[in-house]
Image 1 (cartoon, each protein chain N blue to C red):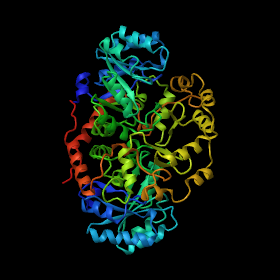
Image 2 (image 1 turned 90 degrees about the horizontal axis):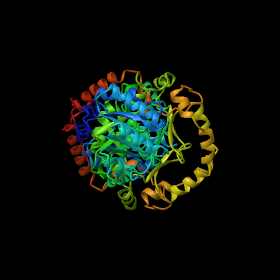
Image 3 (image 1 turned 135 degrees about the vertical axis):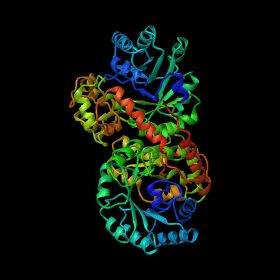
Length: 313
Length: 313
């Protein structure tokens, strides 16, 4: 066990990431029942829908659940109030300053985790009273930092920079990856891409199948200077790539991005025009198991690796 | 031990990387004497100078040494012939097809290691008869692949793709990093950045000091679409950044790159106009030890991490 897992009452060091369009109450409850921290991704939900997902999850598990709230959405505070009212006491906040809601959440008795992409932001989180940070690397799917620090370089530098527990995210999809980041000093992992391809995820089956067929080189971080986002390569990706190669400005890129592309791709299964947010580790995903079977396998792989470390004289 | 370390007669799983302007005979011999694989970087040397460095190293150690040969240089074959004539039987080749020289090197009785940035190229190396691959991630210093696969995602996918041993490179500067990539299935690590800041490296002291002062976010991979190279941020980096932001073409970028910038920066210590090739893990480098003291510390850290893995029920 690690101190963070003990504190959060987890029997595995795994946090199922909250993701837009993909991680509703069903996935979060299944992850929680298997000993991980189950997280509902509020980013794609209006407060009413979030309320439904939380209640659905609570009907399926007695374990504590988390809600992920991207702070850039204008309804972030309503989402937080909704979750608090329904008894949620673990929050993962991202895409905004840790100063905005940490005090409010702490005053309500919540455990606050904030997502960071640099050691500097981790220090600011600690100063703001955040309880733990997710150190998320360049290889992660979806929205990403601008400094392009990879998980392997980011995690140990965040561990050295703060005293609060560090959770590693980005590039982890099997027990080898869990062991690797725990070796770096992380107390848990947050995994997104791997959980998209589970029975309980809300991703469209077309999207799940596309992940199964992805090769190692099939994702790319795009819009690195404006709003960096890692995408599976498809026609939509090609549109953005072409615009970037001719030096399109931020407004032109945002107009290509448009509205509803992420929902079209990930929830409705439009693999051509849809925006398919996924991590670089998609190439290592080869099946669509139940969440319980996945977590059992991940821990079995982790134990095998951690018991068989090569020794040197 | 790992099978690769046994085969190469190493007492540590550490390969000191061959690097332009930085890794001559002195550093390679010191690394070899401390139980690592010492490597002379031939990329910045004419065959005569390479010959001098090999003989200097051989006078300082009885251990086997390696030579790193970037295949894009027109003198690559002369470098190989020079090294073979002086008894070198471990070669690390990069920046070219493994088909070009592998047969020649194998016929001469050499052990051939080729650097790859994708699982696909690793398979081609195996088919060409290469003995082991270095899987080098996006976070590595200097020249880099175009697919931007990070060490954490690249290594396990290369391990799964080939039967030959895999060496991890990019983002490793302490014992935590060594344990992390060995957990991913690597049989050894190749470290560059960490060895630049040693007593025996040929880097100018200005460059070593700049590495000590580097923060986590002080490097960036530039020229991603032409000749990707990871640089420490300085005036030279700013010139390239400005050109890329206005969509300069490859020829314009190459003219900024010019000639002799790498030597000016790394060997002659011009921190303003020089090209400073260094890895993203520079932010974790805080001292300039002897190579022997460094390797002793790395293994001590590695043992501490590998013996204290968190266990879960």
